[in-house]
Length: 378
Image (cartoon, rainbow, N blue to C red):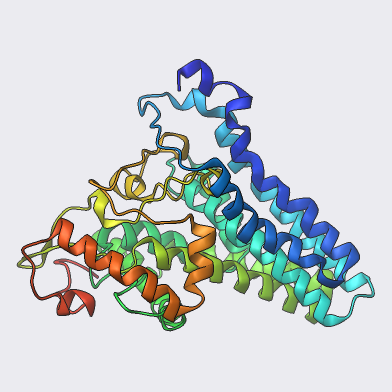
């Protein structure tokens, strides 16, 4: 794409499909019944079907495109927090004020969590990687609205630095099912994120509970969201809010699970691992699901160049990065049935090992994440 094309709103329109969730969630809150499945169908199945129609997008934009040319792409991420905030708390107010049975209200909250997980956390991920304070604040607000604020610290200080090593909790191990993975990361990631922040403060000669520790901000923002939910809807409003949040971070961890499943970095000895390269993440070039998730599936390039904004992310062919056979919506659905997922993905992991590391004969320690901890890891 030329700079002139980037500057056109029409070029960015496909990445605005996230707004399609909003009326679907409100319809489900107004009508109840099985209407909550509209949001589920939109996020899980519709874009899998459209992927089959639109195919792959293997074109790579010019990475030197200035950020000023990306206004219409960035705008959807900048407006999403107010859209999500109004939707979450407006829907909770509508549910507690209406006459839907409790199970239908839970269904609506689930559909709401599909939106806040598939879109809200993905947009927060894009924003937290930026250097501008207002974008990072928007990321913190989005994460607080799903009670997952520690994700910022864990993602920036641990995941990107230690992906594919035993220090990274969210690198899914070979043959590890999603259910055991999910409960492991819920247990390990919050303390892992806090240790990383404490270690960074210690390097500055500051105590772990210093006021600059972002966990103070995380607690304040998350507490404010919980209080607001309780003020609007009482204890039941609080239940609905927590349920949508749990649904959202369940979706996040489904995505984390497939992004690096079974992939590891070579151990070089003396606590050192090879640098992160495109072949340490699964890549997917499916056009429609990349519109929905703002190119998150070009994950190989994201880890290779973490500061690259989503419109400029590159894709790779099978000689440079392992390829997912489907987009994230289809693969995350498959991941919810661990035996089927392992049967489908384990042969691909073995093929990746043969392609990129033909000299490694014993993968036992890599499979179990039993290689030594990286040097200097907190």
